[in-house]
Image (tube, rainbow, N blue to C red; front, side):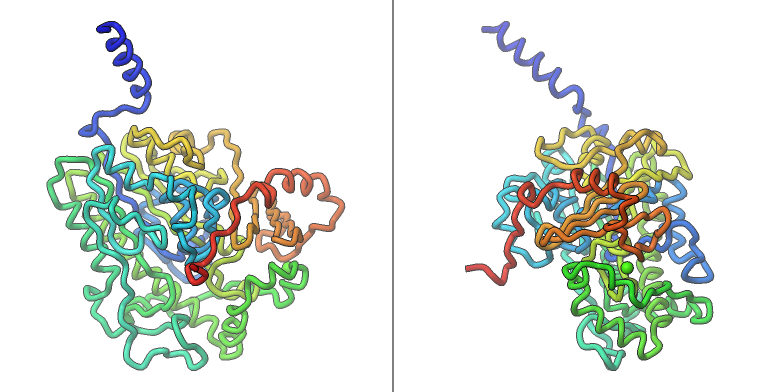
Length: 464
Ligand SMILES: [Ca+2]
């Protein structure tokens, strides 16, 4: 009997050794999420304004590894965050839209949310601001401040043609009264505390989500004559299938109004202003970390949840399968692993966050977790990689990016195909060009069929 027990203990030790790190030696995690921040700041930072738009995020990127080609699993707040916090891809959870009834996804119900895995593994967990959305594992956090929007300024909406959130202008609040500032302050407090356990502190900032109400000083950073607007192609949607055009419904009218009122430049200025405000808050949190005793044993991750259109493809905001909405920011600074100035051009997904953080912290992820740990790329940003990223949306629309192409399939099997090496703005759908027949066939076969994808979970409104 004794021998059997001994064997069991040895076996258990061998099984866990690969992932086992004493809780006290584990790295802390600071997870920073910025809402609706597109990829404009990648590459030429002066493309949209005469200066670096987000200096603090830029500084963080330069101190570690930035993924220039990171894509969201679903280009919409709730499904994107649900995918990376649950580890379950939309194609398995059926969560492809905002406002769905998460209780009806059996894959999600059986999942172990990332903060839950960390809490069970001996971490102190805290969530401030907009971290989860819809799928919200509230009990997984030891401390939590949920997201609330700032009050609307008196006199808003400032745009004559809008009601609701599609608006911008100076806010009436002092910066310290704004909610994103408070979330950053709460994260800073955690970094100033003495912790006897490793921590996972997540801080999610709402800006530059609309409406763009931020202090005037952030608008002043971007004089209108220095602001460049994205180039638009007026007949861009003519070669897009009907369901692709339909994703712009409800937003195209807003674009037309912005253009008709000559406000495109002002809109870009407001987006940059809102980004700069968020960046300033991120800067405060990162400064607090660098001044804390945790600087050298804390992993920093900064990411956005989805991209953002400002008129391209006659669309505003997100929830499309084009580059503007699917391409996101993702960067890591890992003491002892990443080297300053690391840039990876490999194509990766936000779905990879869960297995990456689990591996970095020596925690075994659940077997059903999707995505791949990015640790090999964090060690060597040029490592060999599969280098594709899949995004899904609505009724099992699916899109795959490879280093050269984008292939998209809608619910009625109509398709788009772009040669992004020649056409980075995805202006010309070449699905019928025989020159690409072999590549199209290959990519068509590389995305899951509709029957392989979970049915869309119904909206909460449809709850019986
Ligand atoms: Ca087009």
